[in-house]
Image (tube, rainbow, N blue to C red; front, side, top):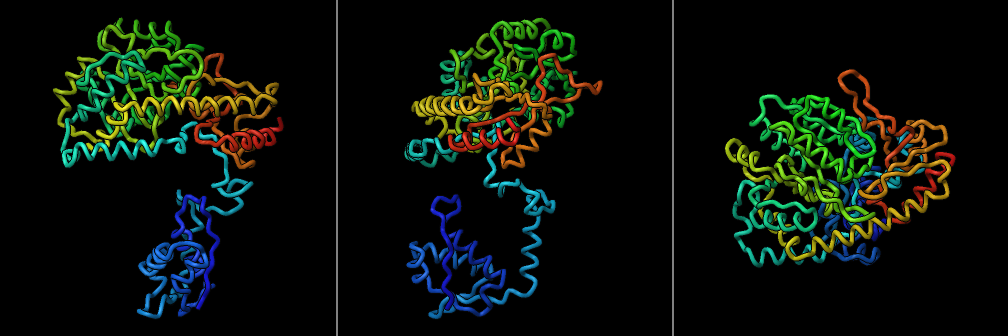
Length: 487
């Protein structure tokens, strides 16, 4: 009988039974435990590890189902003959990364495995702060109230109760007055943008979309993937450059005014009114206002959405819950002007909603109960604290750094004035087990092959996100970057 005693980590994201399963499986594959060997009883192993018998049983049963073990009645568990090629096959699989390319230990980040890398991703959120008890209660309340009707179908534009909740929320938080019938719900921004392009195409024989450069790459990929002509418009200190926009052939403009991605510019009210004047000057022009992280502004009062200033019905408002709650909450929405709503109902109302009904009811309840607003307030405080800590940790190096974009959003820009190129900054950070994101990848070439920079365009600049990092990781990460960049 073999005594198998793996080291268990109670803080690991992997369950205890999976840790037992993984450890024993590797020993079986490596030949450390020979074929025919009887393993420890479930009760004995559970006692040795300080876990329940059910936990050990789950691990053993998984290995039996995969053919690594055999269960003999009243005798226990025995190791199967795995054949001489099993180690080679497993090693071959493990030698490839998720992308299918061969990797070795020394090609990864120098200071350790990817799990130890401090990733300053601008796309992260702090999942540890989710109010799970409130969410669980909301789910229970929804099913207790709605019963089987929670599984009934709903309007193609989305559940009316959720659209009503969104109307109230947008009026109170963004100054946007709309009716429930103007809202179209969809599973994620990707789907919503594809649907919007179809609505616009049903009204325009020729459509050209202007996009801020640097761009939000996902939206650019969706537009160009749908064969939409895109014109790249440079930015100035207030956002999209109006002279360049007016000189373009575009009749649609896609903008992120609350916190331009990736530069972090907050479009002031006068530029917003200029943009509205551009749209209303020619019939058929529209503004797509992507307000994806408008909740997280840390200095002064929130600036009203452009949609809240729109008297001519030229603004299409785009919102999502992927930043405010979690990336896996694939619920996004459009607020469309009356003429686009008419076009949607005439040409595209045959689409069914892409969000399941229970999820919509749960989100509506979460908003209507006030729990969503309370969650946003807590997250704003949490992210402000992380932002402040980040800026404070960078302060000793202020002579060699220029920090910007700190008033809103979940990332900041860091221009490093030590003579290193952006490529060197990213590479040296990687060697120090940190991951940063160069600004140049967000600038695209226009049709002449020239990136339309204006004079303020940053050089030797990286994006540093902080939302998903702990306070300890922020401090440790800044220290690692200071060494890597020789600050």
